[in-house]
Length: 366
Ligand code: SF4
Ligand code: SF4
Image (cartoon, rainbow, N blue to C red; front, side, top):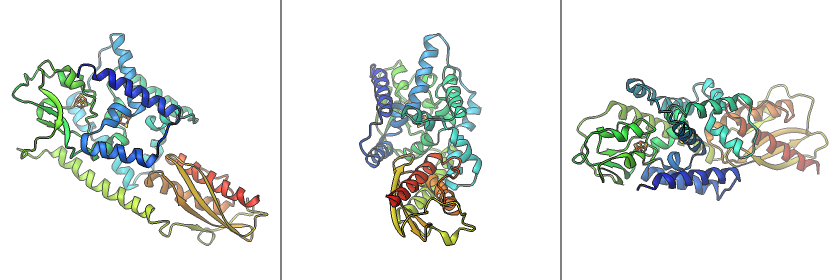
């Protein structure tokens, strides 16, 4: 177990390199693999894979190399703030707040992935990225602890994991060394089976424990809970609501366009300027890169007017994609032009749709 942190560092580095060279097997396969692993064994993604998690760890190591001690947020504050990422996730899934979508444009995890994949990112997003990296010198994983919706999503999925960190209470001397090193500030000594949704399976607690075999990673021993934790009830309710909403929006996407195809009849005041001039009546397919994969559309032209745009398929998260789709398609038909604004918080999906429509129209001119 001693060398595990070296292996973790190497795996994180490898994942960063694979992201940089845009290595991909199949998005669906990778997602399914990560979700299954998370469901049964916890959030390995955050501790071992996520490139922005690695960046925060690396800045933390640099700080330690210069003798900078990690500071801890007061416990009472952490106990409140640790719910913030679940709250952001819930607001996002409920689609209640435009502010959340706007703020998520600056999500340093997403922007870092974009940067290393060779895309351009606006300067404010780079500053946010630099800010969280620098804060990581003094506080461990500041972004992961309180703001990352991806981490929150995986944390919720891992709540009933079968394999986890276990503490042998009979051997534990309560020195709390494990809690001092835990980057996610988890109360490890309060439990036997650690199924905390914030745990990232970094195993630093196991490495730091002075009594051998007190902390280990293995199958959960089931026992009746002595008391019901209020925090767990909140997290569980969030899980149930979020999953319900997430899957209902995914199902509406999977079942086709579900009446959401945008047609010229549904759009007021179509502009004179148009990109369909000279294009014969017919339906044309086009595709382009969205946030997580290819966006395919079908554009129907009649009397040199774009009448209808149909999303054939996409691989982005439904909550962001639908937000982009609901605005961008209407704007394209209204202006008869692909020179339309992207939707805040769904920029990559918007760009994917716009370019796919543009490519579809181009096939009509050939
Ligand atoms: S919490 Fe977010 S940023 Fe942190 S490691 Fe997990 S996915 Fe990455
Ligand atoms: S509990 Fe242990 S494995 Fe989980 S985040 Fe903390 S140190 Fe890492």
